[in-house]
Amino acid sequence: MLQQRTMPEEKLVKVFVNGSLFSFLLCTPINMKELAVGWLFTQGCIRSMDDINSLSVCDSMDDINVWLASEPTSPPSKYRFITSSGCSGGQVDSLQYFKEIEKLRSSLRVSGKDLVGIMSRMFDKLASITDNSGLHFASLARSDNFSEILMGYDIGRHNAVDKVIGAGLLEDIDFGSTILTTSGRISSDMVLKAAAAGVPVIVTQKSITTLAVDIASSAGIAVVGRLNKPDAAVMGQADRIAD
Image (cartoon, helix red, strand yellow):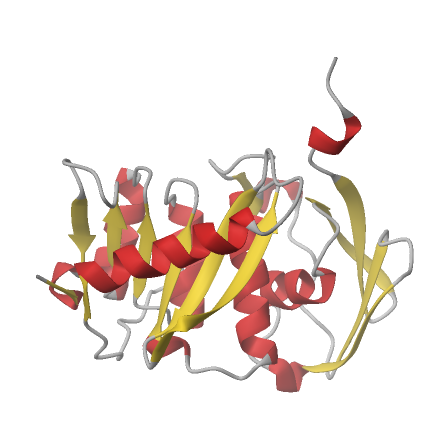
């Protein structure tokens, strides 16, 4: 019989913006402030922390209340939602796919050896978290100090990415000098999130989807799949990865 401690926690959370219900999120209820900030940012609802007047999470972790400096755009209609290829049914506003993607100005280049080290440190941190079965992980490493990484974990790959991007916004880091790692495959919605933040390199030990590569190429992002395996692939802006 499945033990309670091996079951990943999942919760339906309501997001209120300026006092009105804005959206629902299915997530692992931890680092909720980071999740809210990252999600609002990658959905295009905010451009920086300056757009947020206040943010609070209720004790039961059921509600997130965000007050913005100005009224947000209306929540997307159901016809504008795209169900992403991420686990737990993440949704992306379809307008994210049709807007013009600006080429990143970052000059970051990193070696394959460094990427292996960053991925290893992410999994070392994973090992320190108890009851991590069924969860996805993401990390954000700074190129000036690869040993210090921000971590996010959740039942959804997309949520984990939102959490580390939210953490980066809260710490006011320079995304142009960071590397994003994920425990799952790299799909198009995850590349869109990285492009919104300005992250130039994304790495996984899993696979990369074709649309993810197309978007990465347009945005100037290097995507590395199946790291540490014989069929490892460097795609998108491949010259960001040094031998």
